[in-house]
Length: 411
Ligand SMILES: Cc1ncc(COP(=O)(O)O)c(C=O)c1O
Image (tube, rainbow, N blue to C red; front, side, top):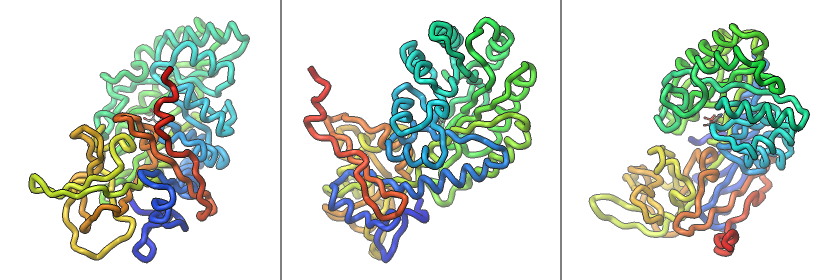
């Protein structure tokens, strides 16, 4: 969706004070462009919404791990939520204090856990009993104490796409309530680990607050049965309006749900998409246009290797020309060059006549975009450009890969 940072001025699409068409000409396409100003503003709005509860915000690096993005948020005061040691490494490289990194993940290896303990990460969100044993062993060997939260699988069905719902009983994530209860009852078996929190993340792009309410009730009921559970990490999931007509709950509505249920607990949040999503666009150039099967097929240089969400989840992103025109609008299928039928960036997108060389912007591509980019079909991953918080300074935050990069790891 367009917003204060990504908007049309005199029929030209801008990111803050920088015209996107000019960036496409200068850096080539496909190209990610992020507004750091928008990222900071989104963080501030969420932090302000949850400030009455004293909640600590940890940006979910899985949504966008670019160092410039992480650095911006760290400077704003955010912690980082990492779902692998690699993401925690990025967070450290971005200047995040180790104590402000929460380490989640359903399958952390022993080596990752060891590294994370050695680097003093702040919280371990534990999803397996064996993981707890590993942590206890590492802590006793290194003479450290570890702060852990058990990730509860609250068995609720979030109102979202099935691929991004994580809190239902059949999901691989977390530990069921009976296991959490049992582990807490024998906490003394893990003398080097302070289990003082419960963690939840029931899904991404949550369409309402009901499942969150139920999940938090379950967590609070368990927490109250055991001494010393002082922290509730309620994960991410704050939704982003990809469609301007969608009716989505606001951060304030989630705050209300927590305020009513989790009073007295230290609260942690892990928003990703709601901070980075609408701050980024993917620029792509039209390569060919053909009419077949009763459709207008626009083949662009951007594809599922840059933005996987449409192919992976059937996600819909608005796609607009960087130079608006008043011509008649008709549906177009925006597809990429990858040899897969699922390589479609947008179906039935209302667009004017397009010709080779025209630039299109895929909106709301700042979350789960570049982080999922791949080299499939031996395509090089795109550059990432940031517009600094002054709104005008353009910086290459990550250069475009080269064919030599494709061969870099082959021996
Ligand atoms: C554990 C955890 N926390 C936070 C997030 C961020 O979610 P979102 O980007 O929807 O805020 C995710 C995403 O799936 C996650 O798995």
